[in-house]
Amino acid sequence: MDARRMRAGLKGWGGVGAMAAVCALVLAWALLLPAGGHTARDDGAGGPGAARVQQARAPEDCPDPEKQTLSPSAADGPTIEAIKNRAGGKRKLVVGIDQNSYRWGYRDPNGGSSGELEGFDIDLVHRIAEDILGDPDAVQFKAIPTDQRITAIQQGRVDMVVRTMTISCQRIEKVAFSAPYFRTGQQVLAPKSSSVTGYDGSLADKEICTAEGSTALSTLQEGQRQNKLPASADLSTVVPNQLDCLVRLQLGEVDAVVTDGALAASQAAQDPTVELKGVPFTTEYYGVAMKKDADDLVRRVNRILVDYREDGDGWQASYERWLSATLGEDASTSEPPAPKYLRES
Image 1 (tube, rainbow, N blue to C red):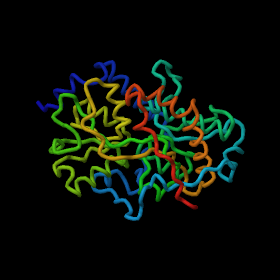
Image 2 (image 1 turned 30 degrees about the vertical axis):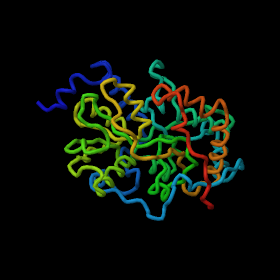
Image 3 (image 1 turned 60 degrees about the vertical axis):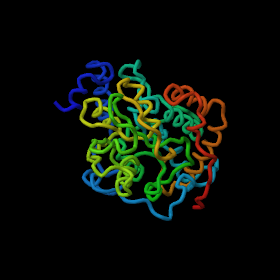
Image 4 (image 1 turned 135 degrees about the vertical axis):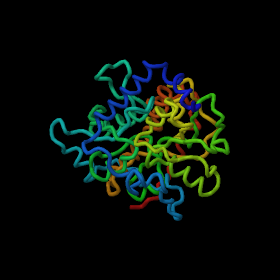
């Protein structure tokens, strides 16, 4: 019997009951998705099959994508005015989020069918809504799969996406980003009993799961092109949503998962049979993503982030509440760098 299949019977969040919880989360996610089902990839480069072949390389003239944002401003502009002019119950900020990422964006497990969304990203959304609309709860949350984040913004289905979204060169060609609000890096997640030791030769002949349109996928593909990752590492398992990779790992269908270390740490906290392997092998920054031409909204979010980082009830308090248990009490390695506003228009 395949070793992964043997492991599957012992893995999970405490057996059958825990796996049922996973299935419930995935089902809830599916029920909240916008109509239309699976659409374009997050990187805008084609359909699902394209992810298994090759993802576009980053533009060579794209240094420091996390610095390519507009300077802060508290002024209202056409985008913000349109949000404020929404009538009645529609006068809300429409935000794409994840509802299945533990401690980042997920539903209160003790809240029943009406469990509130909570987590580090959700705290930031409430702060943005409070600043723009005067009410932290004036938000319409939309669950957006990993591979639909950019599409949702471009199609106007959301005003912004706050969903552990890495600022990258490919993405700033399609959407606008705020200054960074979090620092992380790609890392390997695998069973504790696995021979995998990190982003190294131990991944040879291993099946690795990534989310479609993710920076993890493009990084691994580039790693194989540069011979930093064994050519025999199988990258064919590409799923719409990052949580799907954890489920496949629990079921023994893949050998390892590669994703942001901040997310992987939370997943390891959910399942005591898996762990982070090795150290982060990239440095990445999360940003709030918005429409390319929504300059006033980008500037406003950057103004909010300045206050959020300085406010004692802001970034640091949210980190201590949600992430210190998985990432450690010292937040310095996760703090975003001092913002640089190099984009002029």
